[in-house]
Length: 170
Image 1 (cartoon, rainbow, N blue to C red):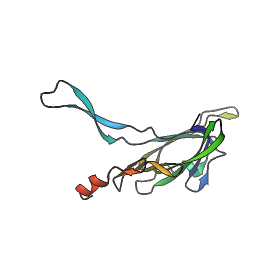
Image 2: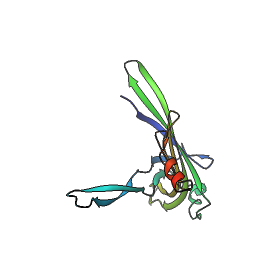
Image 3: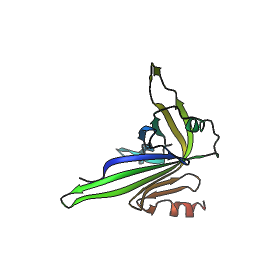
Image 4: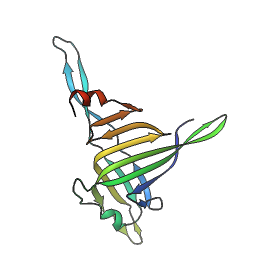
């Protein structure tokens, strides 16, 4: 058994969220696509295009104004999130722990308010979008890096956009 998620933590700006976080969900990765049929062709394929905008979601236990107050910022006044994850490889030889770090820069775009009943409240739901930087590193290898302003796409340590950016003089 490998890459079993055995725990995680969020930092938002300089604030550790470990004791506040109920749940966290990193962005789903998805590309746009267009139908493509070659001239005279009998078949159509979905031609992949750009990577769709990313969104992360998390829930906090409690109404933390230091995080809620991040909502409303304009583009350029970015918020940094860092997600840490412990992955476990379990086998006949024993246990090996591996670290995963995901850096995200974007904006808090939604704050869902809690429903309160008596002395109980739902978690505060936070959505993080307008993501301009997403970097996923596992065991010191850059698995994904999406950098909007530098038009950079790195997949498993390979810069897929280097030749493209050279040709268009980006």
